[in-house]
Image (spheres, rainbow, N blue to C red):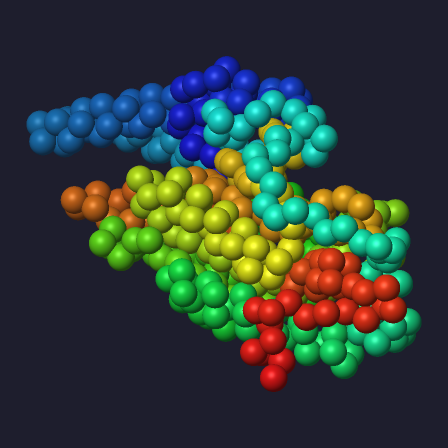
Length: 413
């Protein structure tokens, strides 16, 4: 959640920054009204409270002097009822403000460029040269007869589900182990996590309430299938205070991820680029604010190194404000080259949320006797299915066979 006190004191400045994320004037106006109503309610409550204190003091003096307090007592009692009513009005105004604020995205960093959508993102660099083929390269769904079974995935579930088999399943497992082992060499501690999380955890990282339509909910249980391991990893420290000396906390985990892809109708309907269930190895960092930029760059470099060691050409892209995610203050995407599609496609997003998630999840650190909010960072290292696709397309041969990247061979015997 954004810092509401700062927002109220610097409304125009924050509103201007939020315009990078296309926050509507209606949403901002609703917040301005909520701020005003809360201020009005708090002032009325405080004035009534001051009057009650004055009346109580006067009542005490009259009792001490053995004066008749009948009339004053009635006034004190009546004012107490009004005080309770005003307190409830102020509480409701504060609740309303917080409800609105939960749907307001993080403030983008000053460095984030203006832009409407992904077409306005800025390429920072390319890594490795794209391969040249003596034949027309195929897309992964044309190469996957022995690796991916789409029909049986649909039969078992519905569209946007698939079954990996044989070498496809083995390469997937090899990728997961490779990603986790590599992340451990960079100081990330590995975790095994519940795939079901409660609503408070999803609110903590920003998926709820705004993106509930994209989540798979377990009815009557109050639980959701996780859309990313970012949710449980970050919330391991939900409502906790960490000694500053323990920071940064670097964590990694492999999990299946589940998304309804509510806004993707008609996009990537073929293949496994966009599935309801997909595998991902995630990095999460909980950091001191002074460390977060350095860790952000380290996480970007780590994901890029994973792709480089796999021999997969990719580019590093700075997201513009219009393409920036809800919780992110800044995001760098890694896009891998897919010869069959003849384009780069996202395979990792590395985001620094600053203290946005920490405010929602109440994750703090103690330093010099003072509690402050940590910074949280997250990123894919990497999306397993998309990496599998990239290997299939970049390592394909004219006869339809697929070579295996050298770094994976030790995992495949």
